[in-house]
Length: 341
Ligand SMILES: *Cc1c(COP(=O)(O)O)cnc(C)c1O
Image (cartoon, rainbow, N blue to C red; front, side, top):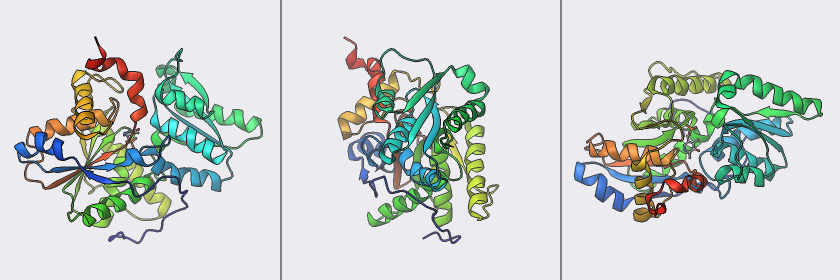
């Protein structure tokens, strides 16, 4: 399938319902793309990979947790924000496979768990909260002492990095890129652009490498929800180099183009202004699709702004990868204008 090098897939669990649908956004395209000479917008529905485990993290965890099981682990440790989709997915995957899950969460404990945090607890994951300062100071140390605690109890823990974004998790969107291109070809087109929200870089890294290895001339752009362009260009290349070391396939990351747009982060990670909420509402009403304010809502809002500026003028087809996250809508309910009376 990959044109440039022969690549053998590693061990993989079968948890996601694949392939996910590829669906056109006709009304959004009419309103926000065609008047500006832009492409037809399609959505790759990775919000439909599963129910509770839905979203992009499940594709990565199929490979990462397969490795954890191979190593004889009985416990998964990972980290993220209070509303981390990655943590929620890991909690449910652990439950499904009979593994312990311990989540290191960045933020203060809340009186009433909501959204993803509610599901973490429902799935029986152990949760420890750390202040953003503690988190930033020494996340490696927090992972190590947590792992030690399990070792003392005679258990074997496997640590999964933020967002399962590393050379192993990269397989998730490397294989998704094959699925996506094949969906497009079935529908009779080669995409000009693939767009996704970027938070820890792994989705973008997999898609970027995958399109490169398949020899397609499609530009993958990550719309950042935190950090800056230089950070993600480095992070995406770091994950690709890690993959390259793990698989023994040389990749020239110097010449690899990594496209990042960091103009729509707004007030900061997990903070969004009224235009993002307006966009989420509009997409729900026009297309029946749920975005959320941390990742997909911000990225989609950024994409729509760029379409209106003529950024994608003259292109025929653009695919937005819907990376999921719908449970995070609920804890942010008060920011919707219809909610304020
Ligand atoms: C984690 C996440 C992303 C970002 O993906 P990365 O691979 O971490 O860059 C985008 N959207 C949603 C809903 C997510 O949970």
